[in-house]
Image 1: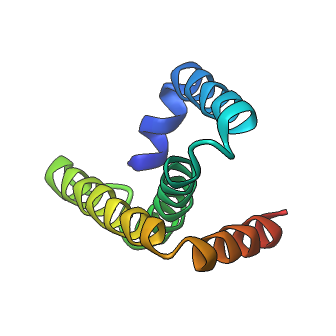
Image 2: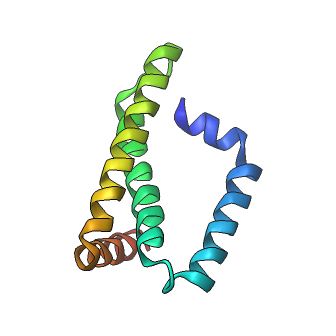
Length: 102
């Protein structure tokens, strides 16, 4: 399912996450809205993908998996966009989610 696609392309996602990490490290304060969008998008994508993999069967057909992935991408984009409009609230939520993960 979704995790299988992510685990098959570990190198690509690893390099992408390292690049995003360096951009956030060096240019985070200059591009606050972009960094909030990227972080909120990644957190909401991970949360929704975890939720959807709990409900998708391992033998689901490809159409169901692609529909779930498109839905996750759409909702994650909406959540990230709404977080860029509420900067102080989004910084609180991102910090709370990061604390809850660690």
